[in-house]
Length: 322
Image 1 (spheres, helix red, strand yellow):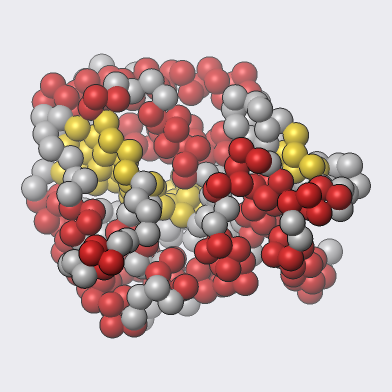
Image 2 (cartoon, rainbow, N blue to C red):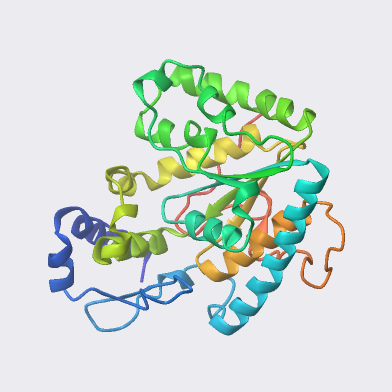
């Protein structure tokens, strides 16, 4: 299929997602399988009765990771996460992990696996809704600062202050001046956090364009996932390249030595979850670390923005000139 044909096909699918009701999509022949699988990796079935294999788009592996291998490795990594949590609590360390990325890139599912066996008394998951009128009148970082950890705690942000760098910029939820002020302020804000002794880890979950649309379709059809699909998600479908440019500008301005970005390729959710866990564990100097489990993350899945530069469907980077 040529690039032009792919663009036509994508536009048709986007139109269906926007104009048809859930039952009408099903009437067109779309269905979801394995929705009740505890692995939480549902499959979209197209009108031809075949799985929609959009996850293969530009992905470095020919097959998804199998459930047995995934569950074995996940358990080993979760044991290591418990060791890390015990170290955080006993030493009074403070750890913040930011989960950012495109809509439907796998952030929430990864956070769920991080939290699955951790002691809930010493970990917080922060997923904020849109700011209130009161919060909109505050200093931008103020609503996030109150959730930063005290000694002995781990905090996971399901989206963070980086809303302004990508979503707010692309969707017009902030002014140009507010955006520019943020991009100047955030490196210094994060230097303040790291100088105060906070371990700050920033993850960007990457997904190809066709796979994102597949996941949106699953959310439209599957009743237990419909809450995940917001009007902003649907409005963003035509702004893929705007999101790409915003993401690249964010990397260029805010990936610093003390707070670098790490990209996680998540077309295969299971591999993405495991390697995200492995990367975070590699950043924490807790004792009794198992080197056979907490080894170097798969470089085909996890890397810096320069190592994993673009995803399929993204235009070539317009690099900032210094």
